Amino acid sequence: MSNQESEIVLSIGELIAIHRDRLHMTQGDLANAAKVSRNYISLLERGRGRHVSIDVLERIFNILDLEIKITHK
Picture 1 (cartoon, rainbow, N blue to C red):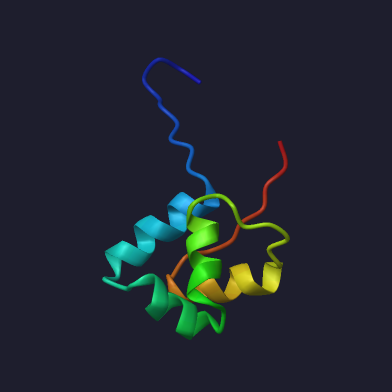
Picture 2: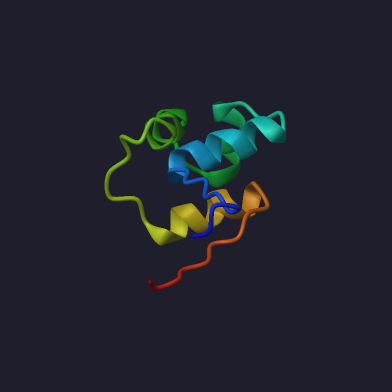
């Protein structure tokens, strides 16, 4: 990475929280739309979610208008 470039690294939870706020959604709103509990969303946003399925992440990302892209380094 050159001196001109910078990289911002966010956790999945931080990304979810930022985009949920951008859409003026509460954790409850997102949970209802994704068919999970509000506590589940809270755990994800705090980085405490364990055993998150790709199906749930896809539902959450679709609601937040985000795209999952997997890259290999």
